[in-house]
Image (tube, rainbow, N blue to C red; front, side, top):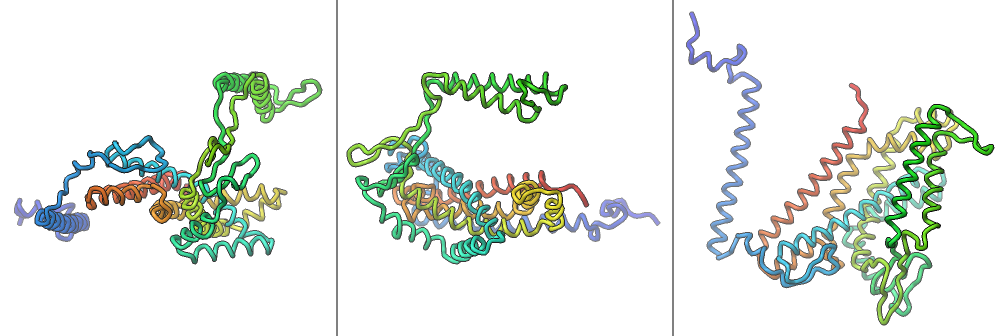
Length: 400
């Protein structure tokens, strides 16, 4: 007895499709996708109907109209004649500046506090523990309010500003730091540095590579150290020989009722940056501590048995392996840092959420602007995930 042709179509690799694992998985996934899309469709239709009944405009065309408001201290040039969409991007730029600087400061401070908690010194480890346990148990918004109203509002007037020699001044108008600006001789100095790097490379490849170690005027020249010394000497001579230094220091000076020159950090930006840095660093410190403790003790003991110092063991053995363990939790903290930047609304720093709220008050387009906010935060989260997963695959050991 032979099977009918129609029945043979229902058999895959000798198994009926209703009992085939692949077919069952694909079917369940297709049904789940249809179910989710149906719910989204129903919600979208319901939203459109309700908006039409209330006379709401769900079009994104109004985003091209003039904003009619300013974005203080925008990273990109902006004025009130620009569009609302451009104002949103100005807020995005300010958020990226805040998040970028906060990621750097948070990572550095978190590593320092995490290593301090692992110190054998009771005082240092105790201070690290007090820092972590205190900051982690205070809500971020409470800590931000404390910085703004408890500390920054008590800063002196410009005439009585605190001066830190070589660094800058601190007043209630903001924090002015000494900036480093390029001069007209920068291009020539860079050319000299490039030529010095070329000479150092030729010395390494043509002289030191084959001869190993040579003597010049009684001084031993080795392959690893000599090219670097040559480059530094050429760069130093090029710096001194020019009539003007390639870089000049621009220090803030009090003129009238305010300071001019240097790099200005507003009190709002400094407050939210400090709050995010100190708060997220308490979590980063615990990630660092746990990652370091996860490194096998046998490797640390072996490194010490080879005569390596504490600093050499930490930088060459412990931290490279701890980085593999810490990368994924650190990505989560960077995402939390990005979302926490929305608390800049407390201090008045014009990041993307503050700009979005102002745009909603001006136009009433709450739905459209909140959709843009959601997309922005999703893109930031996806970016951190992609970078973190790439780095995680790169540094992980190959093995079973």
